[in-house]
Length: 378
Image (cartoon, one colour):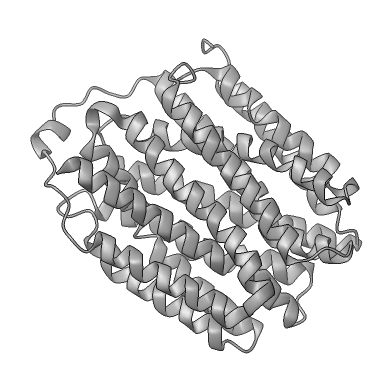
């Protein structure tokens, strides 16, 4: 019973991120068609990210009692309507309004699923989270790959309708109740979380916020750069697809290897190539050279996300709240870094400065993590 529930939630995670990134492949190009510049592109993640980040901790706390997916069944239906609305939108204001709705709707989905998975397999949290991570990550990669191809071949309406259909699949998968939680087991007098574990949680949150800020810069601003150098939608979709398939492979390895748990070196060293890649990316114009950088991004994203989520829910105390905090902090990075990059590129008229700024923030994040974990073993 619990095994089937884990499989169902994994498939729902695959479809949810596939649908989201079918959408997010098309949204920047839709904005460019309406005449958006670097600053307007930088505001796209803000429109989705602000309502998401301010709602996830509260939404996660709501899951601590009763059926964790109760609210998600309503809000995912709202996300379906937002996806369909993108078919008919006629200006940037409409795009922003629908992204606000989408951000709020999905805030009730992801923390609930993450906490539910940890409940279902409390004796093997890392492994169940690993399969969950591989599911949503491969869904995200598939969304980018299919999104670029659908957009180039069939246009915006087909892309956004496909996204809505995928979200309907998510609704079907989460409709049935999950097995009841053992509240006695999860509410046993839990000893205070050691300071070492809290330090790794905080460092994981910092890593994840910056890593997903970098990923969003690539999603939102790289279409503009590729257009500037004469490249199109298919290369963007392929690039982001390779990024997230590489992340999926990283998740697979991290699921089967536990030696990275509560160790400093793997967390920092696996992010470093992603930061260095950002400095090189604006100088690369050949498709194969561009694609060669994608696995480095996937490696950094993989360790940052898995560490943040694992350290958030490894202990049974306040799993829903911590999963919500993990999502909120991730989104703050996805919100502020693309906005800052867009402002810099817009005011200097140098699109490449968006990537140099991202590299500088990534380097500062590695230093911050090192300081937070100073004196910890590993």
